[in-house]
Amino acid sequence: MTRALPDYSVTGNGPVTIFMLHGAFGAKEYWRNQLQAFSDLGLRVVAWDAPGYGCSPLPDDFSVEVAAEALSKLIAHEKTETNIVLGHSMGGMIAIRTYGMVGEMIDGLVLSASSAAFGKSEGEWQREFVRARVAPLDAGQTLEEFAPKMLSKMFAPGLSNAHTEMVVKVVSQMKPETFRAAIQAITQFDARDVLPSMTVPALCIAGGHDLNAAPPKVMEKLSTKIAKGEFQCMDHVGHFGWAEDPEEFNTRVLTFLKDRIPSVAEVMKTS
Image 1: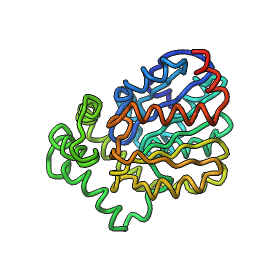
Image 2: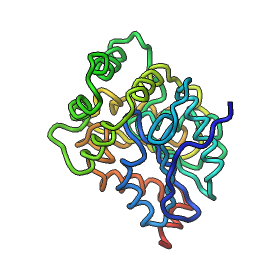
Image 3: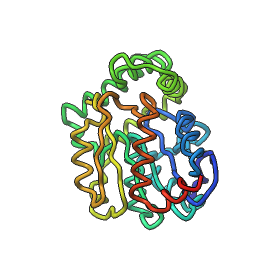
Image 4: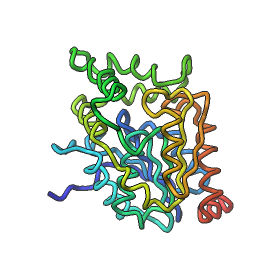
C-alpha cells in the first residue's frame, strides 16, 4: 500500500534543511522555539507529524520501521543540498532506522534523549517503562488527566516553563490509540545493525536527570558505536532538554552542526 506524505510544516528557506522529529509523546507543534531559532540563522526547518500524530492518520501496522519509510519519502520530497535529521526520543529511533534506508540523503544527525534499541521486553526496566505509561489508560484515565503527572517525572525536578507547559498541552491532546501504538513500537525497536554504517557527524545529547527513558550512560555508549559520534550531556535537565532549557539545547546543536558540517557554517555565516 502506498502511503501519502505525513503532515508537516516548512519554516524558512535555504540550502540546509533540518528535519525535526518529535518523540512518542508529542507532535510538530512543540518545536516552536527551535523553528524560530534555527530559521532565524538561515536554516530551513521541516517539522513533521509522524504517522498517527496530529493530522497524519495512524497506520494499522504502525512501527518505527513504518514511520522511517514515511520519513524517507518526506526527505526525498523536501531535501535540499544539505539535510540534517534531528530526532527526539522515538524520533531519534526513527532517524536511525531512516539512515539505514536512505543514508545517502542524510548529512548529519542529532539524536536527543534516544537509543538504538529498546532491549529485552522482559527486562525489569523495560517492563516498568511500559507499565508507567500504559497503566493509567488501562485504568480508564484520559491522557489529559494523567499526562501532566507522567511528564512532570520526565522533567528535571522542579523545572517548569512555558516550553514544558507546551509539551504537556500537546501530549494531553494526543489520540490514545496513537499513544498505545507508539509504546508498542518502541518495545519492538532494535536498529543496532544500522550503527556501523553511519558515517555522518552525529550528536547524541542527553539530560542528566533522564534516568528512565534515555539515561546518559546509554546515550554515551550509543555515541561510541557511531564513527563520527559525539556525546554531550545537559546535566540540569531531564528527558525534554530542548524544552527545559531551549537556549542551551539550541546552542549545543547549532555549534555542533556549524563545527562539523561546513555547509551549515557557511549558511550561518551569511545569515
